[in-house]
Structure formats: structure tokens, C-alpha cells
Length: 272
Image (tube, rainbow, N blue to C red; front, side):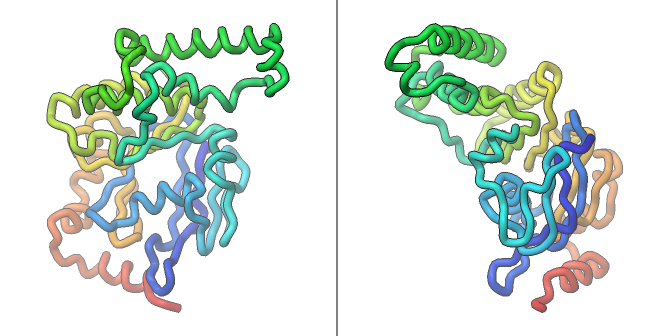
């Protein structure tokens, strides 16, 4: 089954077409990347998937059900409950909370007790809190953060902050995890560490992964599929080796004229 489907989904801001009608399907369990030059529409696609924006036209489906239709979409918290999680290019941790509490708070959507049970300290509340502590410990151990659990998140090195952000996203129990430039601003050592983290997520968690990334060595090394955007238009969608040798992709990254792609972009983004 496809976990995610774009069905001719597009978005305009006034007279500007940010993403032209886009179609693709992400099968369950696949690790794919969206790449393209700056301004290609990559983050806008993520914002469409996660309910930040509603499409101007077309539809987006998640696990066989529509979650976005023209000018209407589920909100981010609703999509999280359905099984979608996201990280951002700029890390958004709760800096004044501990490492452990950053992960613990992400389990909130899975608790089955309310305020009364909390005040009365019912057995159900106690059991679920014990479960959250256990699951939090497992995630911290998997991501080599267990020894840092009592420290504040803002005091972590940058690479550890990124791993914590991914661990927190996984605590929501997603079926689809979206990573927006997970190695942004990192040195080569940190980039290698995050690459191994993504490998770990792929190997140990039953989910689909879609990432935006500028480090081509990461994309070509771990992704099964690469979707390339240019000017809001999809210009390639294939396995990494084919994309790497695609003349349209090469031209887009080198900034060289490409009459075929330029014509497609002009047609797709024309004001109607």
C-alpha cells in the first residue's frame, strides 16, 4: 500500500505557482528524497504534506484516505495523530527541558487517561506513565542519548540535538517520517553521524522516510528513490544512479539553460 500519494496537487500564492501539479506515490517502507536547487519548492511540498498549507488544486492522500483537497486540509496535530511526523531545517527542541522530557512529551498523544485520572493517580495513569518512561529510555538508548538524559536540550552539541529531534519525532509513533535537511549546518563528522542515524531509523523502525537534503553523498548513499524538483516542477523521479546521470538534473544544478525544462516550468507556472 502507498503511505502517501500526491494526485496533481499544486499550490499558488497569488499569481506565483510555488508547486506545479505534482503526482507521486510513496510506498510503505520506502526511503526517498526530494532534491533540487534553492527555490525549487521542496519545503513547500513538505508544508503541503504536513498541513501547513492546503493545496490550490489536486489532492494529497495518506494511507488510502484524502487528507488535503483544494483549499482544505487536516491540521498538523490531526496528521500527527494519524501517523505523520516531521523535523525542520532549523532544530525546534524545547531547549529548557531535559533530553528525557523532550522525548517524554511526544508520547502525550498516546496516553489514554485524562485530568481526573492524573489527579487521583489511578492505576491506569501509573501504568501508562511507567510505559512512557520505559519507551523513552529505549529511544534514548537507541540514539546514544541515555547518558545525557538529565541535561538540558539546548546544551547538547548540534549533532546530538538533531538526533534528539529525530528521537522525539519517533516517539509519536509515525508511519511516515519527514526529515527537512537533517544535516543542515553540520560539519562532515556530524553529517556522517546523522547519516548513520537515518540508516538506523530505516533498519529498526517500521515506517516510510521522505527527506529533503542537499548533501548528495547522503542522498545517493542511502535513498532508494530520488524525486527532483526545479521551479516547482518535477523533472526526475528515479533510482539514485539514474537521477545522478540525468541531463535535466545536471543542468538544473549547474544553472545551465535547459529549453525542455524551462518550457515545462513556464507552462506549469503560467498565470491562468
